[in-house]
Length: 134
Image 1 (tube, rainbow, N blue to C red):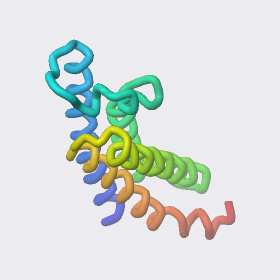
Image 2: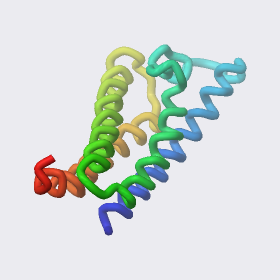
Image 3: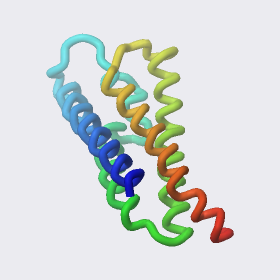
Image 4: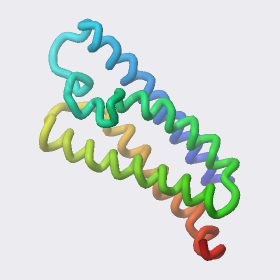
């Protein structure tokens, strides 16, 4: 129960960051942002939509799923989503350091949240998945 609560809190932090960055992305699209920003780079839209919008959908889904996922398939799907988010964060973190070269504390907060959620999710669900032999 403690791990689920921590994951839920982390998802709340991730959702806050995603909403902030989505608002910033919308302001940039309207030309209201002055100066350079990560939301103005091509990597801010990896899947054809703003990355922040993906986060706005992802974090609440994980926060709910971590409490209701029962059974091997649901847990595997949740772990796969967590792994995909953490892998995407690793790519974006690399990009932030070596390609974009911009400071973005909100981005780093999101990356750390994704990596922590993966580790905690792995710790929470992997023993069940392995014990069921799925």
